[in-house]
Length: 151
Image (cartoon, rainbow, N blue to C red; front, side, top):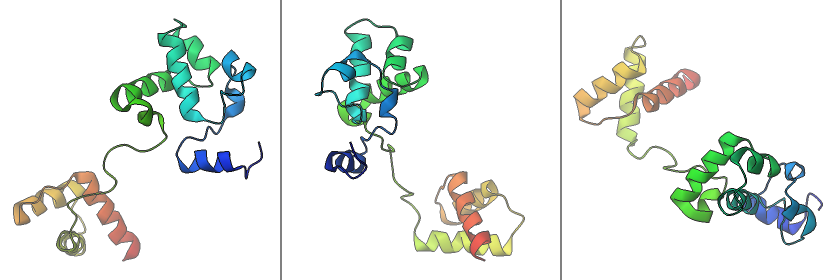
C-alpha cells in the first residue's frame, strides 16, 4: 500500500496507523486480507484476543503481533478502561492545564522576574498562599522555563 493511500491517511488521522506493519507475523494477518497489519487498533485487539481466547502466552502473543510484553500489558489496561477506543494511539486525560488564567500566568511571570532564585515548588507554594490557587509544581516549572526562554 503506497504512502498516500486513502486508508493509510484515514488510519493516521484516527490515531490507528501501525508504523511497523512488517513486525506483525500472526497467521491471521498473513493469510486473510480482512486483517490489515496497518490497522494498529485491529492488531492490538487481535493480540489481546489471541491471549484471552486462544490461550496464547503474553510473550508469544506480543511477539506475533509486533509488540513487547510491556506494550501488551499497557494495551490490556487501556482496553479494560476504554474498550476498543482505548486501543487508539491518543494521549489520555486532560489536554493542557485548566486553571491557568491570564492573571495566574502574569503572577508567575512577575514572581520569576522578582525572585529568579525561587524554584517551581516555591513559586507554586507562594501562589497558593497569595491567591489561593493550587498549581502543580511542574506546571509552574513549565511557565518559568517559558519566561526564561522568552525573556
